[in-house]
Image (cartoon, rainbow, N blue to C red):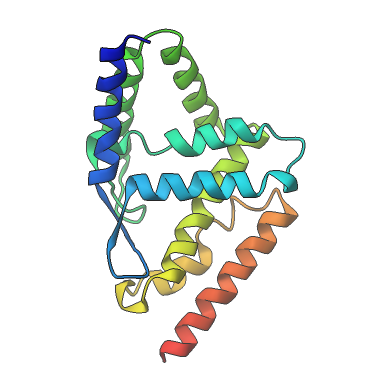
Length: 187
């Protein structure tokens, strides 16, 4: 890849370090989009043995790229995101993907199409883990950072996405138990 192209791509990706998410860390600092994507990628790496039939390298790539559209729009929490937000983010993302040099534009486009379709095992693993990482982060953050909606949303978030896997259903249940314990301790 041309070195100037590489620098320009990294400059766009740097936005993910600057944009914060609705989530907070255990030290009362807002989490960046990049931090979420990094830990999601790490999560995918460590569940590889649970999915020997999956291409975990592809899952990790999905985890790395999945929020790249937010480099253009910033993060909008799932409970505030509208179809208009989704459309704008998608248009900006695909415009950026089309600007990438070949073969990267084709590879990244194919990756996003696979993630959007949610038909492959890899895309389902990525999507479920994305939801689980959010709950994990919320459980690690002080309860004072939660909004009232999250007391129930944390327990419901990702339930549909884990249904295809016994292991991920167990992970979801463990995270729910942690959420419930956290709420009980606070009261």
